[in-house]
Length: 443
Image (tube, rainbow, N blue to C red; front, side):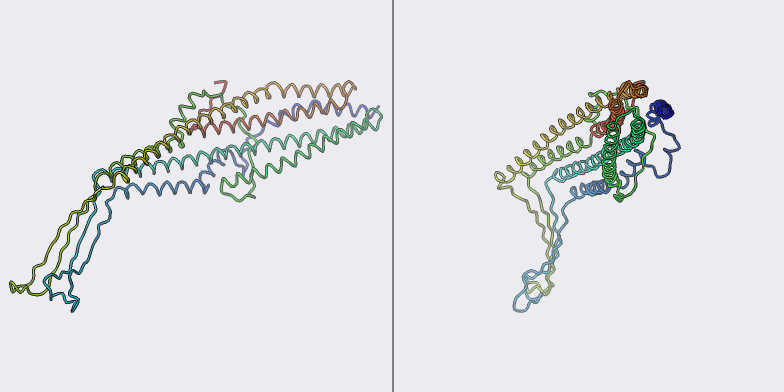
């Protein structure tokens, strides 16, 4: 009888503590959140933006492209020539023959008016595209950091829930063993509790492995060593923002998404190339001037030979326009059409990204609310009620264990919904190219 009383008291106290422990798992202190070495979501993003080598590479590429337009708009380099004309081969003397000259010349090619301007326009559009590509890379990195950070947070909460349930199941094992020894329970109850405890141990192994994998990925994004420890805060914002309007998201994407801005710049560059190809129907010019120095005495006049100056204007003749310039124009038109089709395709792809992310966010937003306000409190009450019934032998041990495992699953699913909700929110911000206003349902 004394053993029975001890068991009943232990079960009763545990039944009172269980709901509080589940609630306490979600309530953490600011002191813990501010502990040194903790990486918040914002800090992870800031570190990735500052140190990620892929971002640095794209920024350097964009910087390099910004130096091209001034080169494209510059005239070709002039050509300096030094010539010795009509040297006599018997003596190579510069004063022997009247036709011998030592020349210095300078020539400059001048493209047809408008060509340099179009080349500069094309280069500007390409540089703009590279800048937008750099911003798109930043968006992708930020989205990945958010996603992995929330995966890590979920895995940490799942591990905590598993470990707490391991403690409870060990209590189950002790209770079942005590009841079995006193003749009030079955050996199968002991075995059942041990099996469920082993399952939780197996789940813990998988969660730890997943956490190590995700930590290595986050470290890579922040340009840290893969083995660097990552500690996340306990206190986070569980309140998912209100579900945004899809039309406003689409409008923002059209205005702010770097991917689309980059493709528009590529389309504009292609249009400039068409105009430049049409300009190639017109000739380019080369202006040259030479000064020839002559030595010796002119026999006809008896005076020193006079130096000579020459001026030359050359013009390219587009004689093969049908097979060259005309084909170049058609080539550029086809390239421009390709870029335009790619822009249309990317707009549709971005629209699909928004729709998919919004659907996921909508589902996770509603799931999290349902678990927090309905399913978990009900499941917790069910476990407490079944514990009270179990102590008077009104509920068998199998149903009690199942109820506890069900509560564990619901708590895990709640944190998965929170994590997936914030991940979907990050995808929405990446798809629109802009941080979204985080209005709550209560505002």
